[in-house]
Length: 299
Image (cartoon, rainbow, N blue to C red; front, side, top):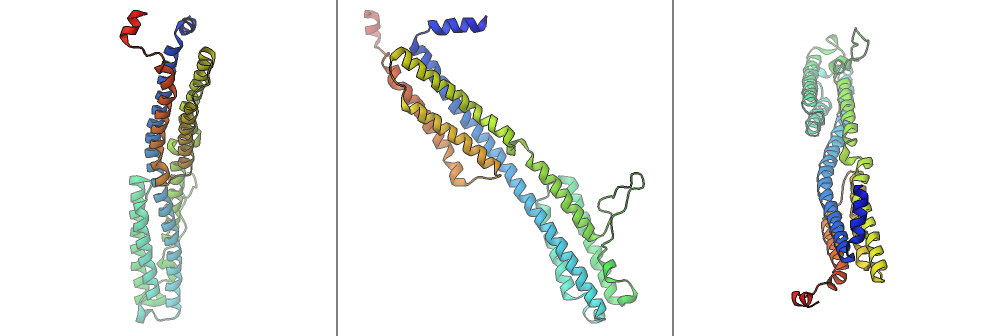
């Protein structure tokens, strides 16, 4: 019943009134697209920055693993050369472990697991300190104390006696670094599935206003052609094109996880231009029915 009443009222309305409704609808869709662009660009930008930091954190952890492995080899070389009483663990070992500490500190800045991840980083830093202390004991006591592999504690993870699954961060330093990298990769996958970077959410969200605007442009063309026997203004098509370009560009850039500043900086001006073109597209047709009050009374 409501739909029939609406259709009856729409048919009884003057074409100029209908054009005003269509103009208001198109301007509303341009404004809605601008609002969605601002929200999506800001939120997606924050998420993309978090993903970038997590990527860098994982790269630092992987590099720390490589340096830890080379530090173990350097300590083994020093012990086998029977020179540990002169040079200690060796400069190569010291440099490698220092690099591991630096990389862990850098990786902690991109930690994606918040408080739990911070505790894991602190635990691995403590393991590194223990490894350095053990290496110094090897250097002072020689091969009779312990071998180089034990100094870097590369032991495998222990298993939970209940379900026989391996427990994270129960192995040595190198194994703990691997566990740390696995946790960060898991967090990275979760960051990539956020709504603001999900194309299955972004495309419908930003293209629905464009689709509605397309329907309004078609409706405007029908009213102008049917009642005024003229073609609609090309400005309306151009306004639709600008609005669609902003929506599509935003979806593509957010999908890629980033956006060029110069590209995103022109999005709002394009939408302002789309609004202006929409207004101009209706201006001349609506202006034909604006009469002074005196002429209305005379008629």
